[in-house]
Image (cartoon, one colour):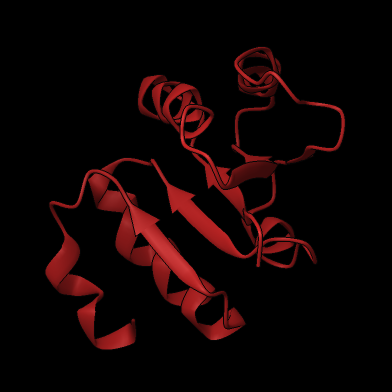
Amino acid sequence: MNEIRIGLAGLGHRGLYMLLLLQRIKGFRVVALCDAVEALHQKGLEALRDRDRVRLYTDYEKFLAHPEMDAVMLTVRCKEQGAIVNPKVAHGTMKIIVWPESNRERFVAGS
């Protein structure tokens, strides 16, 4: 695998910051963005240099089913992380990256 195709869920301040950082790391390509607040999608696209092939989602389950995604980064509020990590594990995605990780102990069994 030459690159890791990543999707990012959560386009608030943390998510936009992570989009900027991911673009500085060789080997990552953002392929999907997800946030329930559709108004945040444009800010997410504006943070990307290569936005032509990026899919946008408001529905988390549809985001998880994105066929060209190798990994998912969650940048949602800590209280929401546990509820959305477990479905991703069930979908069999390669990796889940959670930031911040304050609730990490809740998902260790499912990862």
